[in-house]
Length: 82
Image (tube, rainbow, N blue to C red; front, side):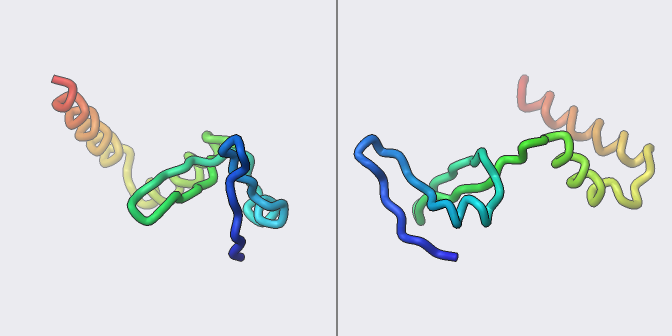
């Protein structure tokens, strides 16, 4: 679906009801680049979102492997802080 929308005098952007119902979200993250603004839904339940993400990321990996990956990430992050 595509709609032409505009800002009001206070700079607010009105998203028409049919778009809001189609997208089914209340909170968004707005990102901009040279091509314009991108609106992305923000999960209402971050724990549920992580669980969905984790199912694919963890599939087929042993606890030992996951611990090794976690340790690498911790070390990488620690190097950036120093």
